[in-house]
Amino acid sequence: MEIHELTLTEVQDLLDRGELSGTDLVEGLYTRIDAVEDKVQAFLELDRERALAEAKEAGKAQIAREADPGPRAGVPVAVKDNVCTMGWKTTCASRILFNFRPPYDATVVARLRQQGHTVLGKTNMDEFAMGSSTEHSAFHPTRNPWDLTRVPGGSSGGSAAAVAAGEALFALGSDTGGSIRLPAAFCGVVGLKPTYGRVSRYGLVAYASSLDQIGPITRTVADCALALGWIAGHDPLDSTSLAAEVPDYRTFLRPEVRGLRIGLPKEYFGEGLDPEVRGAVEKAVQQLEEGGAAVLEVSLPHTEYALAAYYLIAPAEASSNLARYDGVRYGFRGEGSDIVELYSDTRRRGFGDEVKRRIMLGTYALSAGYYDAYYLNALRVRTLIRRDFEAAFQKVDVLACPTSPTVAFRLGERTDDPMQMYLSDIYTVPVNLAGLPALSVPCGLNHEGLPIGLQLIGPPLSEGRLLQVGYAYEERRGPFPRPQL
Image 1 (cartoon, rainbow, N blue to C red):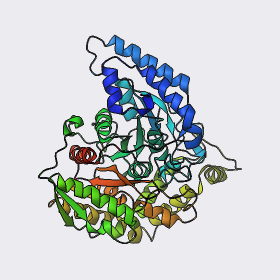
Image 2: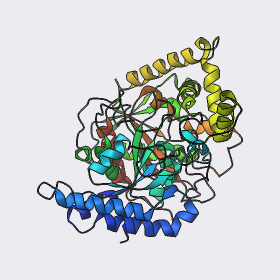
Image 3: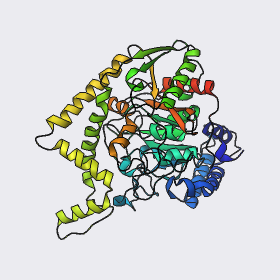
Image 4: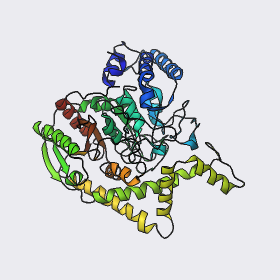
């Protein structure tokens, strides 16, 4: 079997037995990248020699630790291009950072390197993580490996497409309103948005700081459990990081759901949901019920206000966070006869249309005379949404629902209609507003052969339970097909 056909768990076993090395993995994955990347365009930066050099250094460090080696590492990781990586560019898919090379690693990358893992390359994304299709990249769109005329989802579309296409075994994404889960659903892979604070955000280029979270994208739930264990944990460099013990998430991987209570939020099964998506999700829940889980209907009554609240809170925070890009300290520099003209020209030419749209929305929402009417009210709605989830979790252990109301749409289909694009996130943004963990698992194909995602949502720090339910469902579903490229 070729390396790109293996799962992360299988590769880790081969590494532990000494039957594979990090350099073998880099070579095998770059062979696959050479074969399919021109079709998928999942990456923004690839450097075979640098990746091989990192793998060789990691191998030498492993030998030096031979007295107490622990599990052998060496997995090359595809990293979303808004996560800082020393030695590799971090552009956020924006012209304004077109050649920025950070002088440090994000904590998640530093942890992976310390464990012997290496960077494979940097993946494409919607500019500054603002989008649902990876069409808002300043450099090129990424294509869905299942159908090259369709989007991979966003904003972590490059990471999800790379895993689906076999170009990577594991990728890092970030999720502000669904940016891990939506691409995972569209590309037929597994994506986990952890509890807010479970994974360090230090070194993640900020979009909306109270919503952003880094998480893994993998082929299987077992792979996701392995990857989450590598990156989770408290970080003193991140003031929002949770000082909570990190369990071995692999211990939750058992095909047992008997006695668990699964809630179906009725607001997630209403108008706008594709009938085939609904059918696939209901079939998945039925399989869990056959395994002994109890299924109950629950209500999240403020769901209808979530999208509006999100598109006030997130742009408001983006307006503040992106003020630092002025052309003076780093990145693209425009022209002007004075400092105001310099700032204006830099930001006009450096930012894309979607980023400008959200900065303007956020600035307006925070402006004098409108702050109370818009931003403050959005924060109140956020509290109500969080309380809805708290009430639901008094009755059930896990919520099950669609990840997206539709399958992947065609490239260019929604770029001129921002509202339709935003509606792709209608089932994912409430999770970020409440700071909860959520897992997207493939649960079927529609009549065109496009993947459908089942979303599992849990209370804070319930990643283990989500992985348990996801794994139990995978065991009943059986192996999921892979795209043919």
